[in-house]
Amino acid sequence: MKKTISTTLILLLTAGLFAQPKYNLSFTEILHEDNNTSSEVQLLGLGIAGKGNVMGLWSHDDMSNSNFYKFRLDYDLLGVGPFKFGGSLQHVDGTNFSAHSESGFFVSISGNLMEKYFSKIDFRYFLETETFDGFVLVKAGDVSIDCLGSYNEDTESLMVKPTVSYNFNKKTSVGLESKFTGAPNKLKRKLGFKVKYNF
Image 1 (cartoon, rainbow, N blue to C red):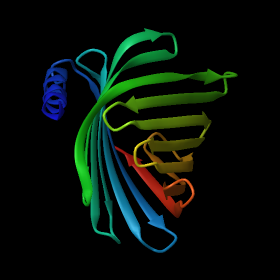
Image 2: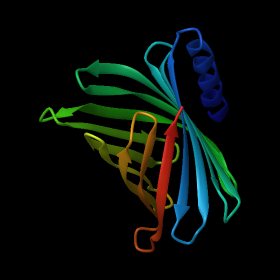
Image 3: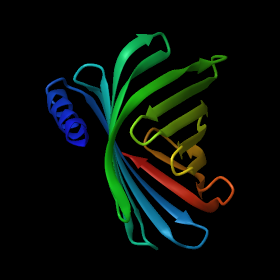
């Protein structure tokens, strides 16, 4: 199953190179309250093989000298107005992390609220690892609030990362980010100042 998912990801990405997709590359640096820093590079590809979107993510934490990698493909199967439903394939790896591939489905809703606010909600569920992923974004003018989260039913591990950002322009933003990880009754928190640049 893992080989099948990995092969499918490679084939769809290769096919997408000939479909003139749109790409966005971003770099994020975070200074945490303990003076530790972490870095993140993210590549987004929209319109892969027609209706597919890909996301490649690499993050590095200086204190633990650890790396984390994620590659995900979402493919739209049904789209009506602001609503989208489709399938997801994902591969995850990292330092002291069990590498695995997984498949599931996603639901996405996006659009304007009261003509002043842009909002987006993404929800995913991966079958092999029984993992829920979620993302919520609300943007008003130059200010945006978002929250990324995941929960694994098997290990009962939780990750919640809310962020408040100010966008100077289309390329640069700064903000405050909190990250909570661990079991729901034993969460560890990290607070940091975030600078993001889009290429």
